[in-house]
Image 1: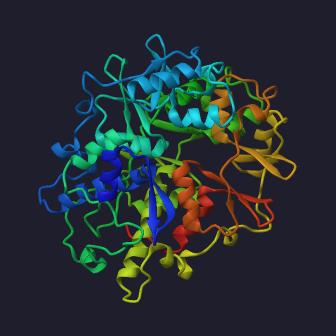
Image 2 (image 1 turned 90 degrees about the horizontal axis):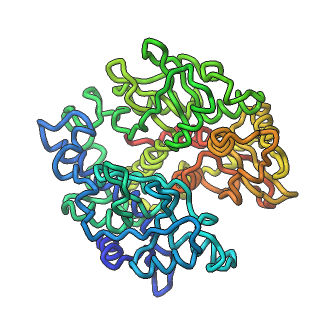
Image 3 (image 1 turned 30 degrees about the vertical axis):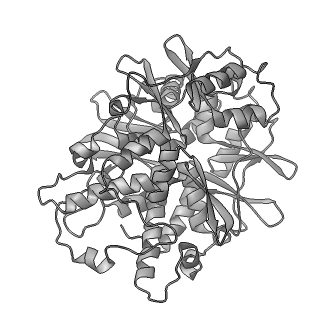
Amino acid sequence: MDTLQKMIRGKFRHLPVVENGEVIASLDIENCLYDVISGIEKTVERESENNLTSPSTFVETLSDQKFQSSLSTIITENSKVAIVMASDPVYVAAKRMKELHVGSVIIMAGNIIQGILTSKDLLMRVVAQNLPPELTFVEKVMTPNPKCATVDTTILEALHIMHDGKFLHLPVIDKDGSVVACLDVLQITHVAISMGSSIHPPPSLSDVGSSTSPNQRRQRSPTNHVGYSNAGGERMVKKFRLSKVLTMPDETPVLDVCRRMAARRVNVAIFTDANSLLCGIVTGKDIATRVVAEKLSPHQTIVSKVMTKYPIFVSSDSLAMDTLQKMIQGKFRHLPVVENGEVIGSLDIKKCLYDVISGIEKTVERESGNNLTAPSTFVETLSNQKFRSSLSTIITENSKVAIVMASDPVYAAAKRMKELQVSSVIIMAGNIIQGILTSKDLLMRVVAQNLPPELTFVGKVMTPNPTCATVDTTILEALHIMHDEKFLHLPVLDKDGSVVACLDVFQITHVAISMGVFDW
């Protein structure tokens, strides 16, 4: 906590860590968001347990004064927003950052936010690429259509947005849609910490002692705690952060569906019939394998022809572990959540990674607490057999890797996904990985943009130079990589650098759960 406060007060995004006089690592404020969020949520949970009249749901608890503070409490009349146009040279954007002492600029077209450009973007996309700042236009290197918050967004929601999206600057708009601020992670974290000394972040990696023993947790009287069932204290679905659902009539054209999904940056849409009842669901994989791979016209095809009809759903009171296992066994990346007959949200497997990792780490902590000779550090604990299983235990000789070339049309990539029943393809140039293309990419970058799959080359829409793991990477390390980088497919290399698999989040999570290592 002292270190985190030091980073916030000094506005240090990175802080060297020294051991025995040697720099062993660098602490990144971005990675600390995990702990800040966890600390706030544990405080909510603890205070609810100490209050017999506590609200029955996590959302209701957040209505308590301490946790309902919105971004409007941070924004002042003097809040600085650096604004440039897409046609401005990068040099102008950098100059504006310097003048206002900020780390980002917002790119506007009238009253519409076109993009954002940060100091990190300048480093990675301009200077590192040896592009001339005076001759490079902002639109060529900006991040288009950035995620935004509103003045009513809560502090905790803002932290979640930044943590999940893996960015450090959050544009804020007022009720009229005008940009009123671009908040820095340090500003938001400072307010979160200052909410009160009752916020306790989880133990550090070198301090895995638990303030409450497992036995004490089991002996507590069953009360209506936040997000837990009355029977055995097991966690319920309502404890998860549900994604807001994008709902449309089932007669909507596929092109319109994809455009709305792209605008909302979601990978799932839910459909209702004439009686407003849930009748279907569509994901990026459906678009890739049922539309693109089949050469259907997105403009002329009605979504009811390609959606998954009458999808499985869960209630908000379902047990979390049962629901997660259902998602893994059925390979559902998204699962509608129903309360009182109405769809209130969608459970996203990507967001569950936070809880999967937390469950494993709590088990490490518990087992260390029960063992007087337990290793003193988290890393040492991972040397135990249960936690050192590597990705090589998942990969078989029959592991499917869909491979295409950058010069192939997108249609060929979609066809390959369908043939191998996978949702990603690896783009290779000889033995070198050039990129990865997922079903979500096809939805967002091809169909939603109304690009012709037969005429659009994979190289134009792929994600270049994807993060890879090796066969020696542990299960937990792989989960952390996918959670931190916010993706669902992980290419795996052998010791010679050859691609031996592209693992799906379900394969890795299934193994993690089969370890029997969850303390929820």
